Image (cartoon, rainbow, N blue to C red):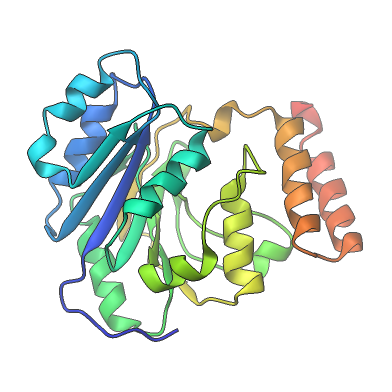
Amino acid sequence: MVTELKTKPVITIITVVLNDEQNIEKTILSVLNQNYKNVEYVIIDGGSTDNTIKIIEKYNQEIAFWKSEKDDGLYDAFNKGLEKATGDLIGFVNSGDLLTEKSLEYLVSYYKRYQDVDFFFGAVKKHWGILHGYKSWKIHFTWGFYSSHSTGFYIKKEAAKILGKYNLKYRYSSDYDYFYRMIVKHKLKGIGTKKNELFGIFKRGGFSSKTPFFDHMVECTRIRLDNGQNKFMVLLTLVIKFIFNLKRI
């Protein structure tokens, strides 16, 4: 999908949060302190009862839109953010995660150089190391084909419209379904940045790490089957994953 190139594209950053007074301000500041300033910042709070709202209110003048209300989980909050996003590029930075100061400069550089690309995966530092690159063929066997959703994933607005919303049918891994549809069904084009082009830092102990292994495995299998992947390949992938994770079960 080729879009008209804008020299200074608007980048929408969506932050979702619930009762995270310890981390939300650091996340907000990592977005507001970007070297690249053409940013539309959207915050979706799930009805926090701690001091999260007071912290968000401190930055009213610099936030394009924010709201606080109960939602139906993380991916419902993502969808609410997408509804408000008007930028040329859209990305997510969950509360607790941080952008590096140069992250959006790296993103715009790739946006200008690769005009036929629909989405971008930036390098992200997690507690075990830096994840980087993008290998689309791996999606048929493993979900370890990209760096990170939060802080690392950005998609052009036109491509996001094609994909639509995150499917709330999947409570733990709707981002995998989103990516499967993006890569396999719609065959959108993506690219990953180099290892030293660090987009963000992913905080340990987030939503994904709290998901029970068995529940996560079952839902990931369901996503593949619902999207029409070959059943034999799905079974083989499931068996291999089960064997390599016996100690966690």
